[in-house]
Length: 123
Image (cartoon, rainbow, N blue to C red; front, side, top):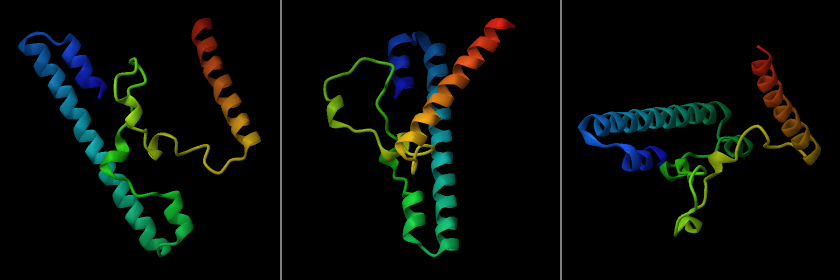
């Protein structure tokens, strides 16, 4: 987890370590809350749809290990190749789109980022 690495590298003294731990615990609580919300919503949808296989494919079961992701901001470390990012990090807006629609979505999102940077620069 990025926060633990930051704490280890930068936190010195009681106050900095306490602040860093509080931030880690806050993020952990939020993660737990969002996982439980997703699980509850998924269960309710499946109850309404009667465990339809197409619905189950759209809302996969979320396990605790599915929330793991490699730290993209740091360099690779020994053993990083063993762990694989979960479905949750690649699932979403591009699911079900053909190649042309994916390219359009990516192009549009890149332009919106550029437009926001231009708007900031011009103000």
